Amino acid sequence: MKPNQYLFDKIKDLMKNVFKEDLIEYEDGNSITLKDTGFWVSVDQKELTIGLEFNHIHYNFDYDSMEDAIDTFFLTLTKRKKITNYSKGSQVFKTKVVIELDNNEILDLGLTSTIPLQFWKKTKSETSYSDEFVNENLVTAEWKELINYAQQRV
Image (cartoon, rainbow, N blue to C red; front, side):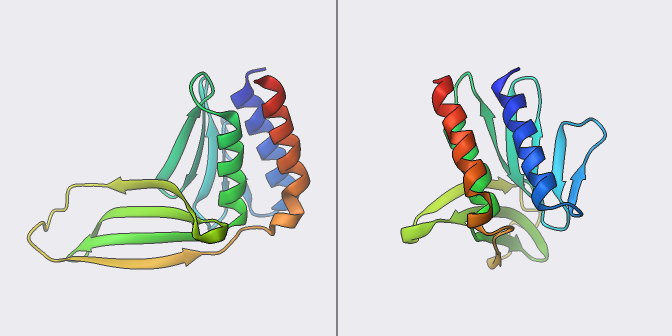
């Protein structure tokens, strides 16, 4: 089994156990989302993708670190997220999502943007926060298990 599929299966099992009623699994079996949060994970032949709304990170384990993918998943699940929307007029044209880590560090989950249709208007920003989806203590054992798997595959 490919590492991206193995990790996705482990993530899906964890999410089913922790979020029994709030997990949505799509028919293709390759995508899951946490109801009403915008948090999602998907897998294809080459990559594991972890996202929050439109912002996401692709992990191809031929090039990327499996440990980074595991950390991104668990940090998105267990830490507070800062979401900044930039708008011109009434249209949001850019969204930045960062995960707030300990010691005032951040993990950038991505930046999505389009061409602002009202480019002549002043840019305004609005920041909101999304709290942790689950307490870190509830998933620490699973986190360690997956990190151990990643380290053995190196």
